Length: 433
Image (cartoon, rainbow, N blue to C red):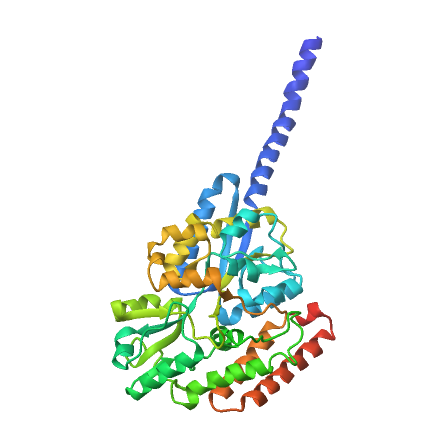
């Protein structure tokens, strides 16, 4: 009797137990499937976008058994910062997203980014190019990681220099006086000496390309606290350095309003002040005649810029572990760096990744790596970088067209400081948005 009652109870009870188990399994599966990470990226060239989509597909395939996935959305560069600002205001940031390197400090100040040190320890940070960790660290904490970096050099045509009686630059580049002397000889030979791409519409080109002139002369764009430009931007050192830079235009060595976007590649200019993105095109056009040197420097040592798109985690993500898993994937040599660098031609972010690219043992690529490991500098870390670069670029455009260097820098200094002071009055976090 007791056994029969027990069997009856089990028969009655097993239905809800099975149902409960089924609910648990489905709920568990649903929960895993719901672990979908939202990520945002900038819309680069189609080849780069294709590579990124393939990286996402590979990530989702590799993590399918865990029930996790990522969904990526791309936005054009000119809309990207605005999209981030709108999403931040609506408390709807994606879990992880690309950040333009000079804006890291702005987003950290606004409380939008999570520190990454927990997931990228000393071994990883040592493996990344030093420029990347320097630009990503705010108050000692790491806020971004990257798959690639950028490089800027002085390309030159050996045959065109030789025809003008100019020897190639030394390994550390020309001093400014040597550079002007070379330009004078090339101009006397009837050739445009150097292309500076002054027709570039983006403000950032001017800050990225020509701040090394300021740095090499011992100057800065903003004080180390990131909050003061008065007495810094229009310093005596900067006036001297940018007066030398202005000489390129006043003596007819560089065009202020060029039409041809690639005069060096088309044989119209003997030198090109440009970046890694032109290396392959220049090699195809020049072959063995192509040379590359560090940028000319006002002081004793060369200085180079760096920085590109990198990846950060939202401070408000509900799944930081999964976000970190994605960041590790997209910045790993095999899964992220190799496909992205092959697609966009940028410089690999990890030292251990250079073995995948034998061309980095030869010029001009070997120079890209050398300067990023030795004398390249990130742009200033300040929540007000967007204001700084806008007004500095405007000053450079005017200086190239003959404006008084000291007066124009003081004007930019006042405009920037006024904006910093006005926004700071409302609190730095509001100011950074």
